[in-house]
Length: 332
Image (cartoon, rainbow, N blue to C red; front, side, top):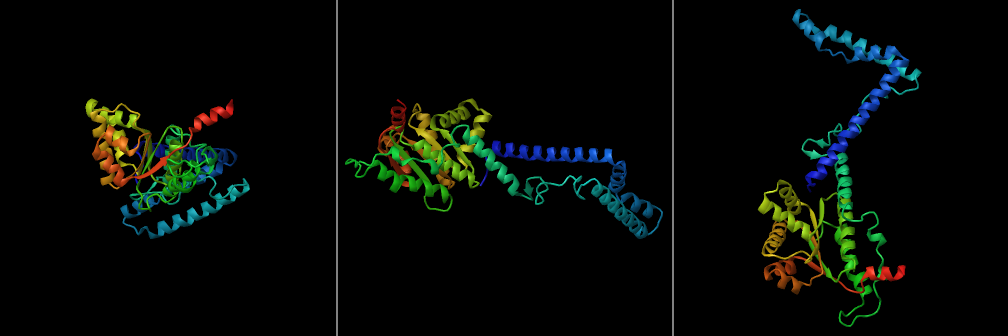
């Protein structure tokens, strides 16, 4: 998995800020302790002196550095014991003045060799949730808070089931399992379709939240914004747009909302095909929500795009009464 560069940069900056804060706090503790017991400052200065000078002097004089090193070790041990006793008299532990890394595994660098350390990984997850929350209400939108009572239990002859049965037996469990088992199941892509106001964006946000919390890179955006960035990259040679399009193509999960609400042109058709095809070829996962049916997709874009969606995306049909209208009625 690979995080968006902006997410990684923000997480790395937070890690460095935390390290600098701890270093400043340790220095403040040292200065307060030194003010109370000046002998501590003298001991620490002596302990910081390295053995290099002793060894170099011995070698320069043609002497065996062994005795000098042994003498220095003995002196340092005496200083450490004296230091411990002074700290104890101040009610402090032996390491309380030391600048100790919060993460022993990476020393607060965020990396163990070429592998991202779990401490940085956790910060990346937090930053990604924050980025998603700027576009989605992740604070209130979760699978646990999803309400089935907005979907009628009355049988719909045209659909062969009721909106509630469709949601409880098919759509909701499919979205939940997709998120919880992301990257482990054969279902790579979802196509959520139906009239506006039926919960497509809400369940997309739920999927984004769970997948992101599991440590995968997730990018959410509307189809209109996505196509505008592709256009800016191609015609304006915008470096920021180039970075954005890389995000769309390379993230572990792309959630494209409101496909069909944008102004459809020959360019948007080309960009949509490039996006779908590139992510399929790279084995990347995608969730698309739209007010259009698969037949509408074929007429509005192209039969090739409709064919790719029909063959590689699992369709989930949303139907029922507009939830926004129900809420408006309840407020009256």
